[in-house]
Image 1 (cartoon, protein in one colour):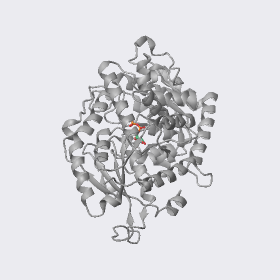
Image 2: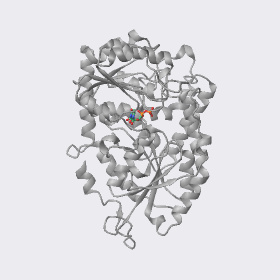
Image 3: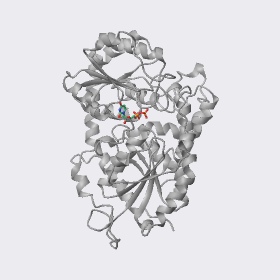
Image 4: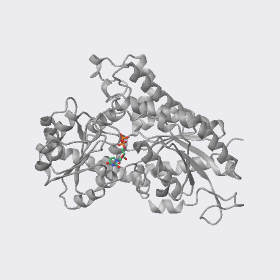
Length: 486
Ligand code: UDP
């Protein structure tokens, strides 16, 4: 990677605009990319990774952001930051009694609404600065920020949309009206196991818009159609995936959108290590891993999923009874309605010798660590990709959103893991861990996972004309071709 990054380091320097320099690159003017991440961990990380790679190609970066889950500018000294005045804290709910999916979708809409006026104002101010209309190339916004994409376009700023899920998932976004027309959605309880013929290998229960009630159905459909609109009204669409992982899915998205689609993943392997973690990462677990044999099960459910106290107890005893070394991330808000996580009495005594529990881990590094031999995940897309790049088999326990679909791909398309479905019972947990970590079947999953890891590395290798590197070149050229309308 460094080769290409260095070669292209000046790609974004507009040699026509030599009048005023404000960069460290010899007084030439840099083109500037504005980015606006959705303020959730699984969206912030890929946006900052993308910003990192564009910065390495010579672009200046300005980050617009909400106060909610705001980034720490001191960790990104090379970027400019524009915090948007409030409204956010009041608008965003942290209601742990509400299902995570409903709370999250409402918060996403709240981010759009409460940032609209201030974004309009601050963007206009930025564009009024001398030379700014020539410097600024575009806004890259999270695909869930349609309102802000519209604001930028109204001010003549070309946009690109970044969707932080898989291509397969976005194919479901595009297909959502069809799924409603054909009666798959809203889902009936009796139809949950019906295969969705148009979107194999999904069943109805794997669809993102699967909902427990009408409110959730309507909110989800609105969320998906707004993301599709953000993509369709932009000049290009960016996905954190790679061609060998999702060849057909990418082809379908390209054909349907009729826009340039840039598959630039796995971003975390291309861009410098993300320093965009909202929670402090407990790095002591890396030292602990250094002292382990290569058989540790890493357990983490991302930043949003939550579970009942009863499920946590079943999970804990399943992990304890499986006898496998483990590193377990227990976020303080993991248990619904509880202020903190309490493990069952006796768990610590049984597992102390072979387990470590942390509140938040440096996950990318953990999954790249040789001692990790398996990953129990909720199946968020970043975690899935990080697991793919780690070459480890995965045990998937999805909760909401795209997680069910990702689990389906792990189990049936890439065949690099298992899905753990139904009631969470300690005996099922124990059995699933044994299958993943110690069975012949698990060994075959590991071999396929290693092959996928190799394909991921190829996608970002210069010598192999990596597909994602080529896509990044196209993205850089695309951005350089953009200019503001007057
Ligand atoms: N993550 C982390 N430390 C942890 C758990 C997760 O840094 O202990 C990061 C992980 O590397 C990933 C992100 O948080 O990049 C979670 O994103 P994902 O899409 O997997 O799930 P979400 O949080 O959006 O449900």
